[in-house]
Structure formats: C-alpha cells, structure tokens
Length: 471
Ligand code: ATP
Image (tube, rainbow, N blue to C red; front, side, top):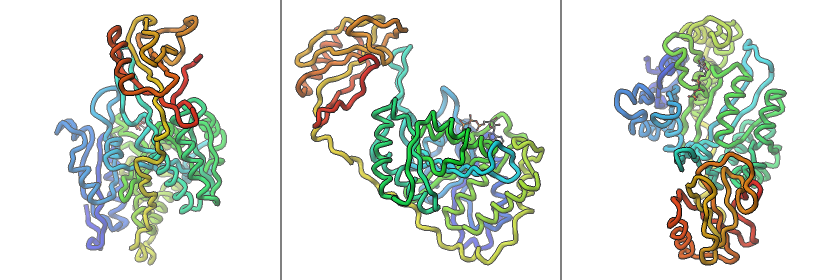
C-alpha cells in the first residue's frame, strides 16, 4: 500500500482487517484512502478467527498495545462464535480500552431505496456494562444466570457524551431508551442519570421512551428521532434495526469512543455467508473510516470521500445487498473515480477538534453510609419447594420465589417450577456479618446453595432490592 505523500505529518492509525469479509472490505477502504491521499500511515495488527486458529488467542496483546499507542484504529469485523468458543474480540477491545460510548449514525443514502427517505439519527450505545459484562453462571444444569450490571458512573459518562456530541453536532433532541418499568433498579438508574445530566444542556430537548415503543415508533416514523442514548443490549439491537431503515448492515458505520482513544468499525459482523466472494459492501466500513477522519480533524478528506461514495450510489453502482451486481472491488474503483478534485481546504485540516471529554465521574458517586443491611436472598437448589429454616437469629423467612414468582408463603401457583429457589430472609433491625454467616450455616446444613445477595434499605427506609412477582 502507498504511503501518503505528506507521510511525515501523517497520523499513524491501527488497522485490523479482521476475518470473514473483513480483509476484502478493509482492502477496499485502504485503496480509497490511498487514492484520496489521506495522510494516514497504517499500523497493521490483526485479530479474529484466523488469528485464533493460528495462535490460540483471537486478540494478541500487541493489538491492544498498538491501539493504545496510536489512539485510533479502524477495525474490520471479527467473528464471534455463538454459544461457545472464544470471547468476542469487539467486546474485549471495548472493555480493555474503556471505549464507553458506541456512536452509530443512521442516515439515508442517495439512490438506496428504503421505506423512509429522511432518516438522520445517531444511536449512542453504552458500550461496557449491562449484560455485556459477561458475568454468567450455571446455577444448576437447568438454570443459567446472567447479571445485568448498570453503574452510576458508567451511565453518567455515556449520557454526558451523548449530550456533548449533540451540542457539538447541533442536534436538537436526545431520547433515552430503556425498560425502567420492568427493570426498575437497573434501567431505573440509567434513566435517573439521564434526568440528572439533561438539565445541564437546556438548549437540547430531552425525553425518554420504552424500548418496545421505540421499536414501533422507529419503524413507523424514524424522523421523529434525533439522538438516542441507550443501554448496551438495546443499543446493539436498535442499531441493526436502524441499519435496516437506511439500506441494511452493509451501510451502517460506527465508532467506539473512550477518553483519548477510539476504534471505528461497521455495525455488521464478519458475514461468513458471503466471505471471499467479492459480494461484500464496503460502505459501512468506509463510512466508519469517514467518521474516523472527522474524529482526527481530517474534515475535507472525509467530505471528499463521502462525496465520491454518494456519487457512486447515485450512479447506481450498488453491491448485491443493495440490489445491484457490483463487486466489492468494482464499488471501490467507482468511489475512487468519483472522488471530487481536492480543494485547498484540505490544507486546513491539520488540527483535530478537541475530543469530547466527559471526564471520569469516579468510582463512588453516591455514598452508602446510610444504608443498612436488613436481610439476604439465598439461592438454593432443590426439586420442589425447599423446607427452609423459618428463623435464623433476627432473620425470618419472608418469601420464596421460583423463576421470579412467589411460591411461599401462600398457595403454590400453578406454574412451571425449576430446581432453583430464591429464599428471602428479612430482619426488622439491621443485621451483622455474624447474622449472615449464621444464615449460610443454617441453610447450608440442609441444602446446596448457589449464591447469596445481601439486602439493604436506605436512610428513608426504601428497599434497595426488587420484589418478586406476587410478593
Ligand atoms: P455479529 O453478531 O457478529 O454482528 P450478525 O449475526 O449481525 O453478526 P452479520 O455477519 O453482520 O451477522 O451478517 C448478517 C447478514 O447481513 C448476513 O446475511 C450478511 O451476509 C449480511 N451482511 C453483513 N455485512 C454485510 C456487508 N458489508 N455487505 C453485504 N452484506 C452484509
């Protein structure tokens, strides 16, 4: 690959080609960047399935080091095996480098026929927490558990980022998407943080919407949305939905942003069904590259490449996913031949804009000094209702639930029961560590227990834990 003419002042960027269609679309993007004379030197560092098969690890430490050193990476897709196999490379990179905001724009493209014409929205997805913490356990062979972790510092950071980005890009509205009517504590905290941050940006309208309603509204009228900030899993799903609104996964770009570093990658995966056939649409990775150029302050290069891309689409050079028959290489050649002549403004591209800095909110935002431990949920394994001790010291058995539905006290509801019971012990007064140890001893003498959760109330006497269905 050619190095840019002004290589001395060029920015070094990590390039991860990835696997599946990754190498094909990365080649296409690199050839367009070369032809456009973008002042970037690639530092190649590969990751993904092929690297896993060759070395036993899908993400060598040297790749993370390269991104940390260069501060910016362009990444092709990497395969994440379903159900078993190695960990997701994408998720590992985001966590290792604390890339806490995933910014995924969805904009209508010319000559790409879709149901709506004027889609222009940006999803800001929290990128680290939620069920993506990967904290999963097999509690019994029949009952597997995954923890949904939502933190106040993490939520504040992504909300601040969303509002700062909205302000910088002149956006009018930020909508927080959640399921706080069901996930009252986790999504409730995410929404509470949104409501705390929003008033700091009085010029930007702020509202919130349930995830299910959001899906319905998006497919009815996506133009009512501007910026969406949401939790990790909802953001993952909504981005694919929004990709569908503007032409599919082949055209949906994204950037993972952290403090002083960023990794740009398409929304789509490695598409093994079309890998190696020259059918892949490089638009999503190219637009991710354009997003990266703007992040680096290379505005005129970004606009020029975007113009070449739009012209090619208007000329109906479409890959198969968009209903055409252009190959990946033909598409890249079309973009190159449609690049407008460079203008003088490319000289003015030296300075990158100040990165959006939302700061570290710190590990503890709200003190728990007024919290009191008043009980514990013990999870025990048994076929059928366990005969739990009714009292252990100050703790009284108050409730047993199965799959979240109360089965004790009172008549057992006519529901499917599994060998996994949550046994709730509560005390009128605060309990001590010794009380908890006594509970573990008393329960452990009778049943196998899997885990225990302490239960707290705050200074106002408010319960800091959820109730079971029917409790
Ligand atoms: P992941 O969970 O890793 O994101 P996924 O399950 O969303 O992956 P993809 O690999 O993104 O799956 O592919 C989904 C579908 O979209 C496949 O049929 C694939 O061929 C198609 N697709 C994805 N990316 C492209 C692309 N760049 N060009 C054309 N088709 C694509």
